[in-house]
Image (cartoon, rainbow, N blue to C red; front, side, top):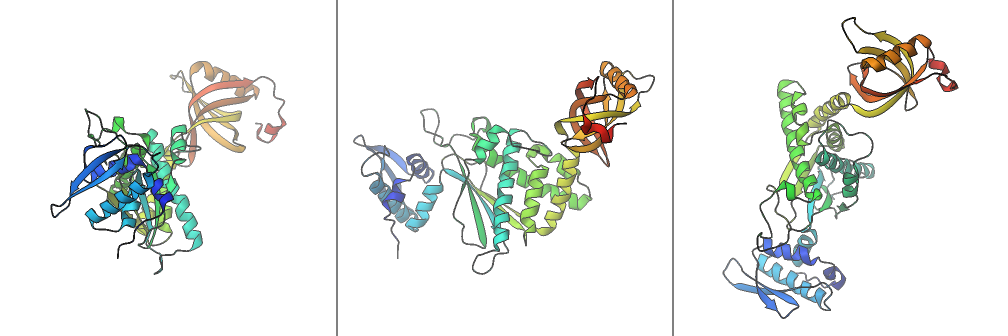
Length: 390
């Protein structure tokens, strides 16, 4: 028995651009116009029988919902499937769909509430890592995302959970590629012409593939070097940690991508599976990445407690103990000659200093690279520094 969709409000919400793109992707051909209100599309089914439908030219037509209902019914007949299935495909045709499958669901397809909440949080972290990598690949992302990445994350939608264990669907909207005399609806994929949302999902796919390959290489060699080589492909500590936490919820995690039908996908639909053992490797990689990636634009304010400058060197090194974000830290920093003279004076006179730089951790030690904006306070009236005063 075929179930027909009669919800006029739901049919009226179908996007004209998305439906047109879907028809083109399924070999429906525009053969003419019906007055000034609709385009005539035709297609032959597998038996050679010809079918025809009318696609409205505007969404404000009085019978728009009815015409969309006719389209859903005709497409379902030609493709020999349910109208509900066709309707869901049309609704999602304007989205790249990222599916996160938790294999540890029970027979009813449910999971523990706390695991479900964590699944949503970590799934967002995975996509956020890809969005940041689409802007600029890095070992680690600290603080807030870039503006374009934050704006993109605000456009994401949650789809209904699906049958098959417990499947969370994240919908990433894709701007349709329109027809012109020079280009078909699906022109050759050119990353430079992609909307940012497609750049993100493409980056997500390549970063998941690179992470899987890096895991295999790391297990074979016992080294984390393969992860370092995967940074340019979008692998970061944020991505590794998010996947590790997803997989750690129980029995691993499956992540798949289905490309929108309104713009040609960069590859076939993809699927990646990460096990609990994979999660252990990813956690190690995430920790290593965080240590190696500089924390940019930090400020330390305190006192110079040590100097080191060899006779043959113009520049000099200094050890500074001070506050960073309210915490006391001791860092080594290198200064160019004019600044180093000020540092030496601050050390000798026990004067407070403030300096900006990039925080880097190497093993148990922390360093301030690219030291800049040095300020020496000639008079120190701040009681906050009493406990670290040399």
